[in-house]
Amino acid sequence: MTTVDRQTVLEIRDPADDSLVGSVKAATPEGVETAIATAKRQAPGWAATPAAGRGVALKDAARSLRARAAEIAVLIESETGKPRAEAEEGVLAGAGTLEQYAELGPVHRGRSLLGDPSATDLMVPEPRGVVVVLTPWNDPVAVACGLLGAAVVMGNTVVHKPSERCPHTGAWLGNVLSEALPEGVLQTVQGDGSVGAELAAHADVDVIAHVGGTAAGRSIAASAAKTGAKVLLENGGNDPLVVDAGVDPVWAAEQAATGAFANSGQICVSVERIHVHQDIADAFLTALAAEAGHRELAPLVDRRHREGVHAQVAEAIAQGADPLVGGIVPDGPGAFYPATVLTGCTSEMRVLTEETFGPVAPVTVAANFDQALAQAAAGEYGLAATVLTSSMAHAQRAWRELPVGTVKINSVFGGAPGGAAHPRGASGSGYGYGPELLGEMTQTKVVHLAIPGP
Image (cartoon, rainbow, N blue to C red; front, side, top):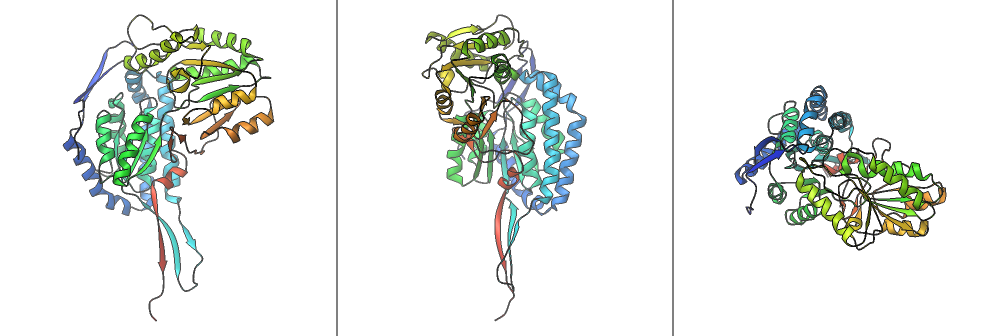
C-alpha cells in the first residue's frame, strides 16, 4: 500500500477561546494495516453471531451512550464549538439510531422464490465483511452512530476514522460502543485525510461509507474503483431555498435564517443560497437582515474553516455583492463569524456555486417562480432543497423537478422518521441512513436447494 504524508499528532484547540483541548497521535501505516487485519480476522465470527445477539449488543451500546450523553456533550462543545445542549441532542439522537437498528437489524429479511415445487429457492442477505466508516465533525456522534450501527448489526466488522477535527470525541465514542461488542468488531483509527485515504485504498476493505467533502468523496470513489469496494457517499451540498410570491415575508425570513444560521451554518442540509421572488424581495430582505442582526452564533469549528468561509464572502463582495449584515471577521479569540446576508449575488460567485458551510445567506432576486426554480436546480450538487410557497401547483412542480435527494416544502428542517434519500451529482450516492442503509451493508446470495438424485 502506498504511504502518503500525514500529520503525526492532531492538536485540537477550543474554537471559542483557542485554549488547548488536547492532542492525539495519528495512526501509522502499520497501525492502519493492523486495524484492517484485525477486522478481517474477526469478521467471520461476528457474521456467524445470531442476528438477535447482535441486536442485543447494539441495545447495550445505546444504553451506555444515553447514560453518558451529558459527558460527551462537553467534549463535543470544546472540540467543535457546537453548543452543549445541541451537542447532547445529537448524542441522544445517535443513541436512538442505535436502538432503531438494534430492532430493525434482526428482522431484516431476504425472500423466498416461487420455483420448482420440489426445490427451495431463496434470496439471502449476508454481511459484506470489513466496513470503513469516515465521519465528519459537525454532528460527530449522530452521524457516526447511523453508519456504525447499521454496519455492526448486519454482521460486519468496522474500522472507524472520525474527523481529525474531533478526535477525542471519536475516541470516546469508540470506547463506549466497543464495551458492548466483542473485541475487534469496532475499532477507531485516528488521523487526517491521508489516513482516510489509506483505509479507503486497502484491498481488504469491502465497504467505504463517507460523510464529508466532495473532493474527498471523489478520491474515495476512485480508490474503490480499483479495489472493488462498495461506496456510500454523502458529500457536499449547495442547498437552495426558493421563496415564492404570496408567502409572508417575515415568516419566510425566519425560515431562511433558521436554515442558514443554525449551528452557525454547519449542517449538511443548511440553506446555502436563497432565490426570492421579486414581488416580496424587499420585505423579505429587510426581515432577513433583522433576523441575522440579532443572532448570537457559536464559533465555527476552527480558524482554518473560518478563513475558508470568509474567503468566499470577501470574494463575493469584491465582485459586487452587498453585505446587508455581517461579512467581517470579528476581533478577539476563537473562530467566531457573524450571521451574514449578501445581496446582488450572481452565478459567477463561489458563494452561490460552492458549499460555504458557514452562517452566510447569499440572495438572488428572481422575476418569477419559473426563474427561481431554474436557479435552484442549477449546479453540480444534489443533496437537498427547500421551497416556501402557498401554491400547491408550485409545490408539486418543485418536488418533481428539483434534482436533489430531499425536497422540503414550507419547512427548512423536519420530516418523518425513517426516510432515506439518494443524494445526486456531486453530493454523493447510495443510502446513508434509514432502514434502507441495512440493505447497503449486506450483499444478497441466491440459493437453489434441490433434492438429490436422478
